[in-house]
Image 1 (cartoon, rainbow, N blue to C red):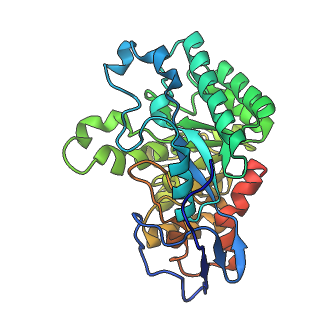
Image 2: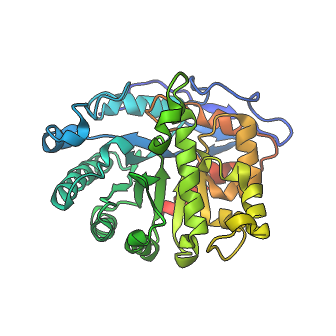
Image 3: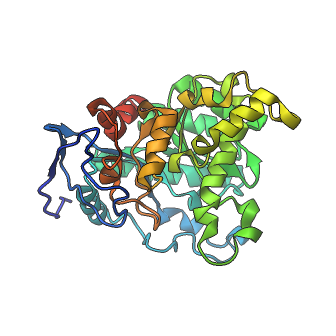
Length: 360
């Protein structure tokens, strides 16, 4: 199926003291159609944070009580099926050349017993492989694994990377309240380190906070999602997981939640040791920022500028969260509204870092 949208591309001139776009450009409209050229150089643009879903698993789960009668494929605006042409058109309009695809968090089904979990992951991983094989210049696959069964997850990751050509995996920030730093997940982290592939951590509303997220404002997403990621990363630091597996490459969704914006408080607790503020970590929490990668889905210009200053441009990867309702469909303009970037910074965030991570 060919792309049907007509894109004329954009040629942008960026200077550190004169960004291409005003502060806080809209995240609801696309200002940078493909192809994107910055300061005379055509840029490869890779979206690290994009989701898909495969209804082929529905016959296996439709009667399960864990779904409480809900349709897991009924999330607003997601539709059923891949809708490839619509997606390619959207990518072209956003200036995105390649999407790194991961399965929506609503289809990880951590309640599934071993055999069912094995089947659910296999079906979704095979469909992911097929889609990416049809459009190898537009899509790159990340696996879904049954992390509730860590040894199985490690086996799945190895199989998917070595046999299916997947470039890593996406996991949720917690498993029904169980932290990713739990020792029982060590076989999975060990395998990810051995394979040298990134693990993309994505939140799922921090469901433990549900009673306080009631009311208006979609707080389970606005506050809960970044909080979920923050707590996951904090445990990986304080429980010593990042020390035990120093070669693990973690990409954190939504700018890593609140970690970077509050890292000074983390360091103070570590340095003062106040009431257990120091855990099993071997260095200051801020020193782990260079072991972590963060997507750019933080929306505000100053939020992104701060993330770059705290973590370094080389630790950031472009993201949209497409096609979720909270997606930023203007990611290039968002980046190029930030002051003080070099041409090297721009290229690294648009594609350079993710190319290294995923060996593209």
